[in-house]
Amino acid sequence: MRWHWLGGKWVARLESFDDSWKALASFPELITELEKQDGKGMTDDIFVTILMQLGFRDLTNYKDPDLKEVCPKCGQPIGGKS
Image 1 (tube, rainbow, N blue to C red):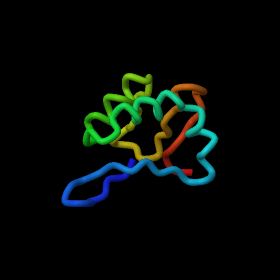
Image 2: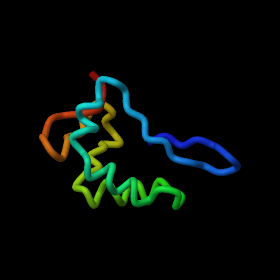
Image 3: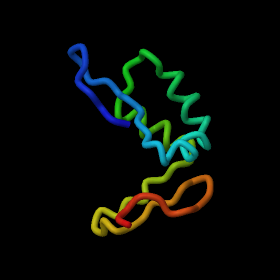
Image 4: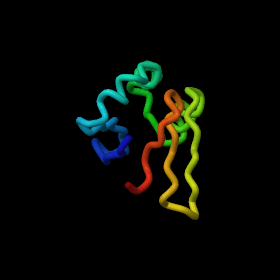
């Protein structure tokens, strides 16, 4: 999720690189929940709440930037430095 100043307010835009479309497609529940917020003024707090309700976990080790997060569906490491 990226935030852009548009029309005098901050608005959310979901972005996905082409090598992650398969992963994005594996989370239809996320798209469904985002659709429910359509036009209501998405905030970062709402987005985090949606992710947490869908089973995502914040595994960020704020002291170790090399820590990799884990996909809640498949358990595979994601993120971090490669």
